[in-house]
Amino acid sequence: MSALANNYNRRKIAFKKGKGSFLYATNGKKYLDFCMGIAVCSLGHANPYLIKAINKQSKRLWHVSNAFQIPEGEKLAKRLTQKTFADSIIFQNSGVEATEAAIKVAKRYFYSIGQPKKNRILCIKNSFHGRTLATIYASGSKKMTEGFGPKIDSFDHFEFGNHQSLKKSITKKTAAIMVETVMGEGGIKVIPDWCLRELKKICNKKKILLILDEVQCGIGRSGKFFAFEYSNVKPDIVPIAKGIGGGFPIGAVLMTKKVASGMIPGTHGSTFGGNPLAMSIGNAVLDQIFKKGFLQNVQKTSKYFHSELNKLKNQYPKIIKEVRGIGLLIGLQLFHDQTKFIKKLMDNKLLTIRAGENVIRILPPLNVKKKEIDLAIKIIKKVCKEYNS
Ligand code: PLP
Image (cartoon, rainbow, N blue to C red; front, side, top):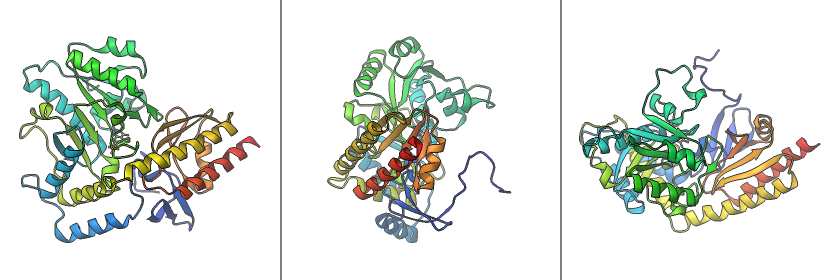
């Protein structure tokens, strides 16, 4: 019996080594990993550049408290602000800490300008922003909140794609609208650019802050550094995590100068968040992602992947309902429950992960090679064929 709690439905497989797009299991088999720790290992497993960076920093300094200056964090924050909408950053260790901090920043901003009653956050029903008490109530999903009452009463909800429901849900108390630019766990549902622009207009008109959760779709996964860049919308607050650490736990909340003004000393903090080891790795990830041509290459490979998957959809129209997503955040929606299909892919040595609405989530590393995409297509095709026969 495992001494680990039973809060995960773990597959019966363990790995001893990873390299690039592949994982080597203790059962001796080699798997093409298009799960990548759920969009975390942005540069693949055991990336030599990241190994060098972690080795170098680990010999120098791992951790000091945020009671002191941390030049590695100053550097990472400066680079992120120079490349994005943000003026200011708070570092954390995970996605949920970043989304929770985003909620705090929004509330605190209105408090600091003398409007403490403007303190509610409007979210999409059944979205995903993490698993703390606050963020499960931000999601509003029954499955996530069941058994965790009393309710954290800060959140209102609207239906994805329902503009009437959105407009009706805004009140004088709404401080911010928080949405995932691409709903990941919910089934790889992309908010169309025109909707994001409308959302921003509504926020401007009603003096509401816009929080775009890019924990899963950010850091190059969409083919741009942030997925919202396709729409030219400028958010006020953006939580990030996953890909920025390439496998090391890093989270952050990015914000404009205006909203950062409420975050005075004592309003937020983290023991580990932003330590020198994490920050050096974050800087090394950015060295790669900001390299000339890196994001263009993500766009190119993802275009190829999407077109190959769409060919499969046309060949197997009774199995594949839709190819969803943007960049290398891809969803293959089936007509039926995807569990068996994911298992068959794994039996054929391709690792993927589920999402809502019968979707198979496909998350290769951002530096995936064409021949690895071809291998994945071959495996998916084989499983489709087996389904058909
Ligand atoms: N926000 C989004 C959009 C996510 O996809 C996730 C995780 O999947 C989170 C927040 C929470 O991140 P973490 O699991 O690192 O706490």
